[in-house]
Structures are given as structure tokens and as C-alpha cells.
Amino acid sequence: MTVESSSKVEPNSEAVVSHLVDHLFRHEAGKMVSSLTHTLGLENLQLAEDAVQDALLKAMRNWPFAGIPQNPSAWLTQVARNYALDVVRRAQNFRTKENEIALLLESRADRGPQSDRTYFDDEIRDNQLQMMFACCHSALPQEAQVALTLKTLCGFGEQEIAAAFLISSPAVAKRLVRARRTIREAAIIFEIPAGKELSQRFDAVLQALYLLFNEGYKASHGDELVRKELCQEAIRLITLLVQHPSGNQPKTHALLALMLFNAARLSSRADTAGNILLLAQQDRSL
Amino acid sequence: MKEQSNEFLYIFRGGADPKQMSPEQMQGNMDAWFAWINNLKSKGHFKGGHPLQDGGKVLAGKKGQTVTDGPFLEGKEEVGGYILLSARDLQSAVELAKGCPALEQNGTVEVRVIQQMEGL
Image 1 (spheres, one colour):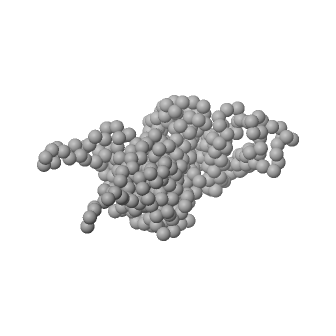
Image 2 (spheres, one colour):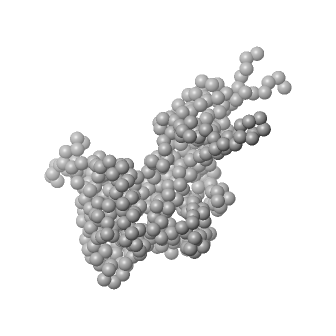
Image 3 (cartoon, one colour):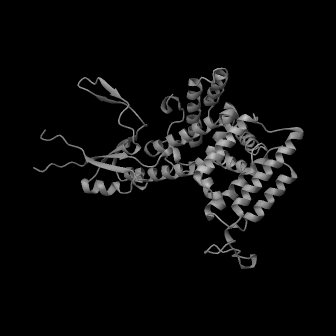
């Protein structure tokens, strides 16, 4: 299936957007991997990631020539679904579930980008939360939890994760491969847990997000831009959590408040040479 | 009479390996290409062009009996896209090509003069 024949989203060549929202690809990647995994199942996380990579690649190559589509997110989502659908139809190991998954992918592709907007947004948020619970599962070592969260939910590349943790790209790649394998072997379910399980697994999520924030906040190493982005991502994810009934708990609010409180002084914590400043020395106007 | 043409072809080869690029890097690359091509468009230089998909077929033999997957073994050799443009002369076509984002990523831009039909 080609982009041209199946995409109902026509490029809008007249009112061409001059540039995209900052981090659009990165954030769309996180949303798309989550919602595709919802359809494909966690055991096919890698396929979901490949489909998203393919869609972004096509956008990167085509948009400069053809113009940016009116709804870039819808375009990307549809192209990623087409890729997944192609693979699902071809692959042997999908045989038993093939039809079910194909139907799901098609019904979603048919649904216009504008239809039932609120429901759609809720669903995307829920899928991201499900992904959060999967990435921060206690079957995974904590450093793998944070790396996987950055890769699948925040759309970070291996190099970017490596830069954040000051380790090599191949080491990150290995960590991610092991994490995906663990997820498959432990048969972790793509869900927002309920009841007793919720509170246990919820703590693991909060802890991973706190680590993510901390990794960004600690001024001891890494470059400043990367550090700031890690803090922003932690805040973005915990905000999603706060908005959901299961995540709307005092401790979530407390952690969000703590992050925001610390992030407020992020720009003024160091002088231009990168030396840490005491509060009294900081530029309060920043 | 001196042969004069104001039509040119850009052929892009090589560049970064997209498999190694993060979403953020892809967006940055997209933005750079978008800005460069838009500049060509707004100044009336751009006459057409497309990116090309990876792979393809190559025919050889007098009757095209040899069809192979092509000499695409090395990524840096593969043509990734083309642009047809109008410019004053070859030198200005070369100047316009200097901002091409492919160059930043160790790709190349080949600039060719379109041969015009003469005397009719």
C-alpha cells in the first residue's frame, strides 16, 4: 500500500506551514508507538517502532517537496498504520491474529482525523499511560525502565539517550534490546492496572519519572540542553498521569509540584561557564 | 553561436543514514530541506523535483534482458532525489546548490545543464 493511494489527507500546498511545532516528530513518535502497540500488542513493540520510524522518514523526504500536510499528525499516523498493516499481512507469525489486527488497523485508518476528537485524545493519552506502565514494570531494571521510557514514549534516539546517561550508543541499544525481550518473556500486558496492582505498579512509574527528572536536574554531567529536555519530558509524562482518574492521586500531584518547583529555577542555576550558583546569586528574572 | 541554457538538474546522492536518525534529527533535517526548497520556489528557480524511494531496478543488455536490483549496494552512490530548476547560468546554479542540506551530511549535489533543442 502506498502513501499516495491510501492517504486521505491531502497536502495543503497553498497554505504551507513554514515550520512545524518544536519536537513534533519526537512527541508524535511517542504517541504513535503507544497507540500502535495498543493495536499490535506489546510483543510487537519493535514493529510499532519500525512503523513509526518509516512514517517519519517518509515525511522527512516528501514534505519538503510536496508541502507539509494540513494535519501532519494524521498523515504520520496513517502512514505508520499502513506500514504495520503491510507487515501484518505478510508475516507468518501473525497468521492466527492476522485478521483481527488487520481489521483494527483498517478501522482506525478509516476514522477521519477530526471525528470524535475528545474521545480520540483520551484514547491517545490512555495508550501513553499503558506504555508508561509497561516501560516502568518492575521486571525491568530501573535504568532500562528510564531508557525504554525515553525511547518509546519520548521519541528519543539511541544517541540522545546515550548523551543523557553518558554511556555509549551501542550500550543503549543493548539495554533496549534486553528490555524488549524481558517485556515479551514476562508477558507484560499493555494496560493501566487496577485494584491492588495499581498502587504497586504506580509507585514504580513515579519512581522512574522521578529518576528521569533527576537525571536531567543533576548538574554534574551531560550537556545542558539534553538535561533540560529530560526534565521537560518527565513533567510532560507526569502531567498525563495527573489527568487520568487512576493517576490523579495526592502523590502524583506532589511529585509534579516538586518537579515544577525545581524546574522553575532550571535556567538560572548555573552561570554561563556552567558553575552552579547559590539561590542568592541567581538571576531571578530568568 | 554560443549554446545557452538556463535549465539545470540537481541530483542528490548520499547523506545521513536515516536508520540511525532520531525523530528530532529527522525533523531538523526535514526543516532544513523545507527551507532550502522553499527558497528556490519563492525565487522562481524551482521547476519540479521529487525524492526517490530506496532501491529499484536496472536494465542492461541489448534487449533489456538483464534486470538487476541495481548498483545500489553503497548508500552514498544512490540517488536520493532530483530537482529541475531554472537559473541564470551554471555558476549561479552552483551557488544556489551550496545551501543544500545534503552537503551537511556528507552527501553530494551534482549540477547538470539541460541540453536545449536548437535551431527550430
